[in-house]
Length: 189
Image (cartoon, rainbow, N blue to C red; front, top):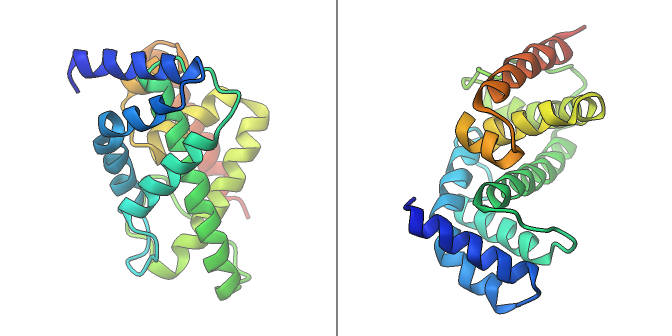
């Protein structure tokens, strides 16, 4: 993304903060491709027969973003961080519906690096990860945000650092620590 596009996004977000409703419509062309990239990244980890497609995930996330109130948009990275969180919530909601249909009683074990998870288990995995992330957030909110941005949003260390207002090295440390904690949490008996 060019520097001028980044500046334009920040300008439009500032107008949104000031209450200009038309800013929401002006923003979409500038952020659509990046939101679509995030959605494809999310959906690449989903089961093949998922009823939600990347385009629908983008539209649902943007709709929810425009309905948000009380957010003081800081910059492009902040916007995409919030978008990553909303996409996670949308996928978790879909996973809950899918899991309710399949009702399995076995605990689910997996690694954050595992992309070869059987399709039948993915809904349960997303729910387990969501619960673990909520638990992590209650102990260390920053680590949970780093996981959310990197794992669900596909953001780089630099992008996550900018969104959180911390250094890239701190993001790397938090990511390693959170992954270890999540591994233990998700694989305990």
